[in-house]
Length: 440
Ligand code: UD1
Ligand code: UDP
Image (cartoon, rainbow, N blue to C red):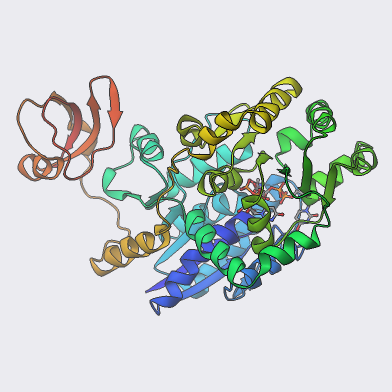
């Protein structure tokens, strides 16, 4: 079996690394296609070294540009490689333009697409990432989903539960493995010393790069005004290249850089960054991955957004959405710094993203599907399928799996009272309202 992996940006390299590792451990054939969306060594090459994964087999070198141009060039390049390599499955991760390009191209070539981190929804269609997620999920064949909540999003969009695999998020695998390596190598002390900060007690790690924050001068100024007042904190800000450019273009960079409590540094490698975040009292970010890492590392996080596709972190109590609102940023940051009980509650929030075995679960599911011949995509002959949708209240003890066997059916939606829940094979359906499809 050959697995192709499409990636192009920093978070994709980090979150695909455990999967690449697992593929290698099992001796499976693979080919890595880098779109070249991120190209600075601090945003790309350094991560292949830090995470100890093989260099990409192909780089399409799309570079920076408009969404249409980037995605179009990616599609052209990925298509050529896939026609040559003929993989059995193409894996894409997350919500960047690479996901959109990879999923569209592969599905049109009738190659199975596996979407890693599928099912996330912010319900904000002004975000390019939301459009990428939805389009990629529409083209996918296997879905590797971090949580039940995200799996329910996909069920509600009509995706068969047989294609959904709740694996946890591979970021937990990466986090656990690499924090351990960083500690063993003594990188902990070294990287903190490199930061050159006199007082290591009150560290606030800051990252931001979302277009809706950093390309919008008013929002950016509102965030900066809050940062200026957080003088009790040592704010460490590994700056994303997009943010550096917009701060410079708006004429805001110098002023921020001169503040003694704000340390603007180059983007850090993964090991150094993990050490920094795990030693922080607080994380302030608009990053997707960092919201997940914060709850994994037990660090309170304030998210510089008004919505999130990671609502589990908020309902678990580890994440507060503060948007770009100066007052909200300051009130919440000060509460975390000054109120130990409040901070501890956030730190103790349960991690919804699994135990660090997401990559193994993903490759298990792919190997099983391959062995059963399920990765061959064929045109269906049954045109009456959608006319056989049914709904019923179940009034006897029966598991989802047995109901499907007895009725020759596929259970779709399940409601326990008014709450929609995920139909695991062994769930007892008694007392529940279900919708299901009957096969002919
Ligand atoms: C992209 C993803 C975003 C993801 C982020 C991770 C899309 C639509 N966006 O956003 O979902 O959260 O990566 O970091 O796919 N630049 C450099 N050097 C680089 C890369 C970029 O200088 O190596 C600068 C360029 O000026 C570029 C700008 O950053 O125009 C934005 O880069 P781009 O890749 O378009 O989007 P990101 O903001 O990085
Ligand atoms: N990260 C890093 N060095 C940095 C900043 C972030 O290694 O200086 C890592 C971080 O640990 C996380 C990922 O980059 O795993 C998040 O990437 P980013 O915020 O660029 O993208 P997003 O997750 O928002 O898509």
